Image (cartoon, rainbow, N blue to C red; front, side):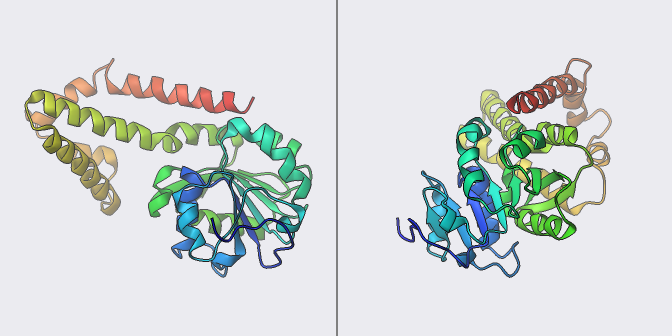
Length: 283
């Protein structure tokens, strides 16, 4: 790869992205699209990842810096460090980062399940923001919820929100427990929608439709429904009722889905499992 930084001071580097996989890469794409980081040029961004994804590779052509690891020289001057690594490897990666990051550098973590207490243990004295984004951030259509420790200033909150806004909407929550709830809802939510789309397509084919056609119908139906939600002022419940004619086909299907042991129970069980797993990841 080109633009590799091996050592030395990067005086113009103010923002570091640690981990450029799916989510890190998604936010990076948002930053470079102009959706966020006002006043921060590509050359001000340093990506750290021993195995960078496609988004990071493409970013190099726009002037973003890259290195396999962070050093004191490359960390000097950093104002914000976004942690987008897998939570399972944080214990191995975190201490090394702590050794080289400036003490006033804002730590923004999108690692699922890693609580503020654990982050403060690894990054003592740092202002820290804990975030739960979701995958549509790659297209500027995501939503991220955040909470922070007592060291984060109002200016740093604005800086964090600016960095996260590259991926879509940003909301704050009052308690850290709510971050685990957000993880179960919007953080993992795209996976639920993808699976629901997969099931609809499979059953369409089982009914006798050509598989490719069933895939296209299911995919576009979910895309279209999302578009309606985007442009309508009605709630999801109101929209559901508006397309459910008494005695019609939608009502017949919803009678099954909305039964006592139907979709509500399954989703409750599924989201509670995600909530519990989010808490477990932080232990």
